[in-house]
Length: 364
Ligand code: KG4
Ligand code: ZN
Image 1 (cartoon, rainbow, N blue to C red):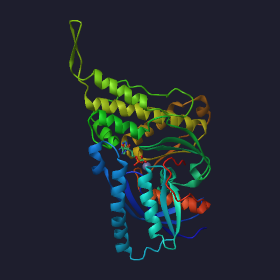
Image 2: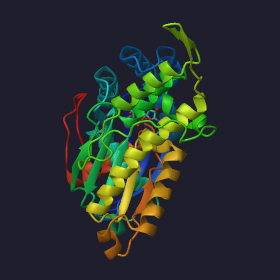
Image 3: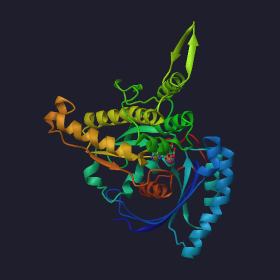
Image 4: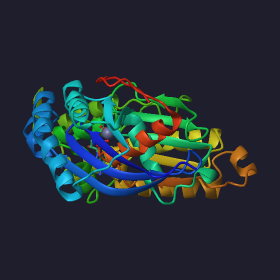
């Protein structure tokens, strides 16, 4: 059994400057974490007027916020006494990533410093849930749904996994952000759409469910966004004159548009995840990434898992007794450094080291 170590983690891949102080213990069969500090300084208000993240502004804000957050930690703890320093090296905005890497190099002194993948951060954020029990989770299906990624992963165990599919264009979070812009809602769009959806009808508009019936595990959300664009154009509430006739167009209710759009996106994600869970006999479904902050996604997942278990998704599943896969949704969905500490600890146990250089396209 590995002894307990203290980890300091830094995350600057996008628009959150984050530090975490975490105590980690246990081996790969039973890693355990105690979160001592979780500091996140969000830049949302800075990027809001631009409707998305502006890389150079992000870099400037990280440079400003890194020393402020670090000072907070060192003031509280005097001696940080860390055994391991972890920093996100990708994927993300390279100018933003470099600020974190350079800062980590500056403060490292004699501490071991390792680079961590932001995606592994999301994936392993599940380990921070006290309900996580490595003995009961595998094989499992992991779903990462964030602003930059939509990835479905088959996990044989904690360290052996395979990407089953991913988005071919926009990520789910990105689709929400773009849809919000079309609806005149602020950035980030996911929470805005979720809020509006509560007052809307999910079946008001029949938006497409791209690739839902395709046998692969890939996704595509740019067509859904285009469908929304056309829908809004055609339902603007303005009367159109053509060849002497006036066509009266209804004005779409924003709440209904949001609810129907969200439902269409979640339907695809949930259907493919449950299909993968069934094909690979998954004992668990582990959901992470910013979009997993959505209460609506959790509710829809639960409903779908229960209904599958009741009616049996397939004869094969019926034979297996319609065992329900356990649903685990991360407690750390949007970007933070606690998840970087968790992923860093797994890398440390595996003696896996990533290059300490920003890589915007780094994979899992
Ligand atoms: O993981 P994350 O913080 O950053 C990336 O790694 O991309 O994810 C951010 C994404 C944004 O697209 C945002 O709109 C979405 O997560 N998001 C949500 C919710 N909260 C954040 N989407 C749907 N519902 C939410 N409540
Ligand atoms: Zn993220």
